[in-house]
Length: 185
Image (cartoon, rainbow, N blue to C red; front, side, top):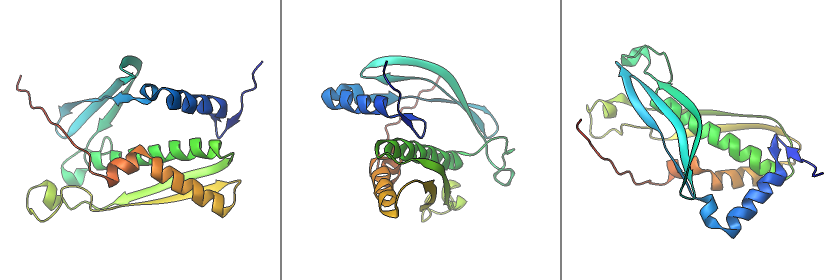
């Protein structure tokens, strides 16, 4: 009977097997993630996520719904986070995955981990008032707080590894092409 070795809730054996499988067949590591967002009313929207593709094969999953709205100060009703807050949440979630998995691979036990993320947005860009102002974040700040069974040197190595391999850190810090299609129904 195989022994299940978990660290930080991550099955280290499965993690190792996944790394080996992708190393042997890079197609196994090819994913296409998908989301559909529908305007619901006023400044509200609902995003549905229920599938992704892996190595060209469609995988149906549990259906997830993410609500979006704006604060009352921006004419919303504050029934849900807004898109720029969801970006912060997505970054925090991605970093959390990276820390848990990489720490497990490095045999580091995490006791507590949290991220405080923030960024400034000037609405003059979004509202088209000033072409000199970006519509999005100028910069983001992420503070990581970790309590783990590891030396400072090991934790610094962990931080560097996570930041170097995080898909969201990469997407935020490097330009990503965006193709748009506009369909009138």
